[in-house]
Length: 313
Image (cartoon, rainbow, N blue to C red):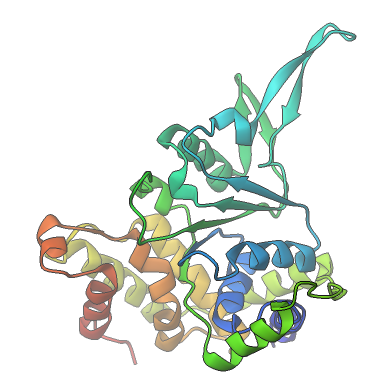
């Protein structure tokens, strides 16, 4: 049974829904990432509520929240921390940076320079930071929510493959539908938008139980083969220079298990894999120059792969 995981998502939807309108799909993705101990890349135009969503998510999660604004002059030590000399103690003391939080919002991450982007690699993969040959552990449930506008190229540094591969999910944030946007205008359209609602928090026990439930979801050998076939198809596709990595295949398997758990199933089906595949695979594909010239994007390639790889019965 998967009551705990579904109850966790219900709580997140109810509490975040008091502040965020029309974001059910993104909240679902954040739930998968939270249970799966993964990181999320939100892609969308400015003004869609990415920062508000991240701050509110951290509040409901019950963790500390820190925000890092991506700029060209942002240094690695600005996010990891630095050793500062204590004149009274006559020794250097480590002053932790904003990475030492439960939920870190890396806003406009592609505006930060390559060195600063690289500083996130160790933190996202190993949940630790190394400064001056000394290693410091990050919080157990450390989660990065990064944002970028995929349509802006002036003054940006595209994320390298190694960085993109560390995001469990990449989720597009689109404009809300008319009804949701009308609620947003009604709620936030006045000069004084009123008192912020009191939000309930998710208990650590509920999160731990949800993770146990997701780990217990059965993954048949045929479904493991299906994930491997999808990975192989991306690697051999003529329009792809770099296909799904082994880390990406692990993320797809984990996300499919959690997807099954959140739908009330005790076992993974091909539909669960296909539901999460766009979030897990598309941002990991490095397309060929010819594909870009022909106007073929990662979503098109992934759609072709999903349509042509045999689905186990």
